[in-house]
Image 1 (cartoon, helix red, strand yellow):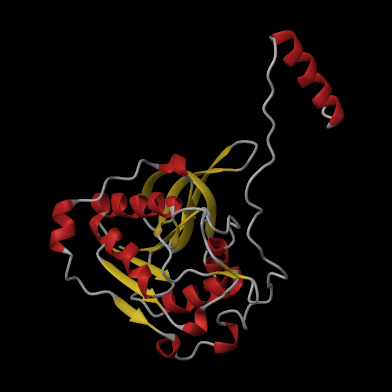
Image 2 (spheres, rainbow, N blue to C red):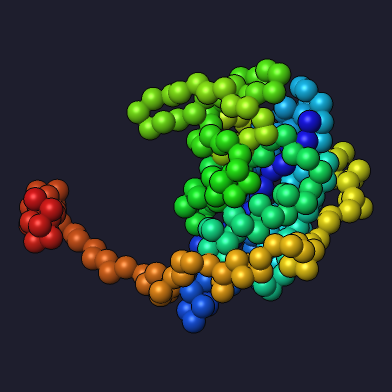
Length: 262
């Protein structure tokens, strides 16, 4: 079995610089971490590998510093890693990102099961996983909350449909996006960190995706673009009130009426 997990490096905090001209986040040199939902997707793949055998390949798109999350994935049980890194990929919207990842997955050894986190904490669109599946013409299930078992050439999972949980049997190869309910990710292994510190990470640029349509890469290949992006205003106005409980209660009530909350 060959499991592929799409992972992303996201900003660790809220202090992120913004390129207001291009409408994108400045990711170079920013403290970053593995997208939390991708950790659940990776755990799902590693658990299945341990139960049924096979290999886990992680794939990410980003600047060279994104190698850090692939290194982290090695300490969590991944076997191979591939980074898509090229200025041509920068500024991609969800469709351009899905296209680039899908083209890279086509060039990997035959894949049985693709995992994605249900969304990323920096975009929250939940579109890339399904986008990859559509571009690869694969069946997929989103918001997977439980993985039951692999049965022959199919996998049985529970998915959150919003108004209830539905159990699905999906034929392989397929793609799943995982919620936090699907498992509890393991902690990084120090033993694996030492064992994999020199493990190779494959790096592909746009030329490595020969045959793909470069017009669909990056910002220029994105059909949707942010019209304007700006940092949120800092600071808040505050008032300090003093007085008896009765006085403060009346004043608080008057303030709520002034703001039309009551």
